[in-house]
Length: 333
View (tube, helix red, strand yellow):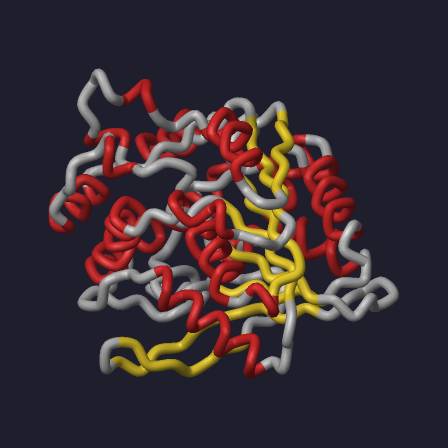
């Protein structure tokens, strides 16, 4: 898919209001923010709070093959960004389930309950149970790999194949980044204006997309900042940064028994917490493709594939990404 078309897909997946020069306030659960498919909610309980887990459950548009793909989003993006991937998978006959984990997207936000990836696995199991889905293939992006890897370890009998795409977590960030108080993370994020946030996405992710293609995501964040619920959202979001640092899965990768395909961009320099690392440590981490290539041979059944792109392969190299995912899933027929 050409870059201009990618930008158009991104823009069209958002409501007109979210694309305005001065976006209006957007509620903490993205109430007035459109997703590409209908959204349903699973009621859950977290830390004494009644919460809702949002999800899209999309039927195949091509001849059904009886299989379901679970899409696990990254930290900076709601599940709606999966639109091109959903189209490709459903067209190939797959049912697709794309949830927003609690703390993200249209799901509930909690500012007094820590983010726990093991709990996200439990929530995902509850969702699939509700939908009466026994087994899934998993495509996880970025932070979503903290859930995807744990899911494959906890539920190998319910997992067909696992795509680890642009994975965050291929190194132990505790080696390079200090423990940072939640309030400092919140304050630093609050001080980040739209231009600074856009620059961060473009540079730390090594994106090959034009800057305007990322504008909808920046505008979404600005809309959230205009909401009276922004402080709760900001604390919830910051808690996920703490979780990424303090809940590594690197040591468990050799235990993953299901077939794994790791897709990584040559320009992807994603390194959570890099801004807090010592100057001499910053060059030592964030080499996502190199880590993927080094770790794949240490796993039971994994291989890595390189892309000339950054962190958002499914938007930067849509056609090739879709082809790689479909080919890999097809090996499990």
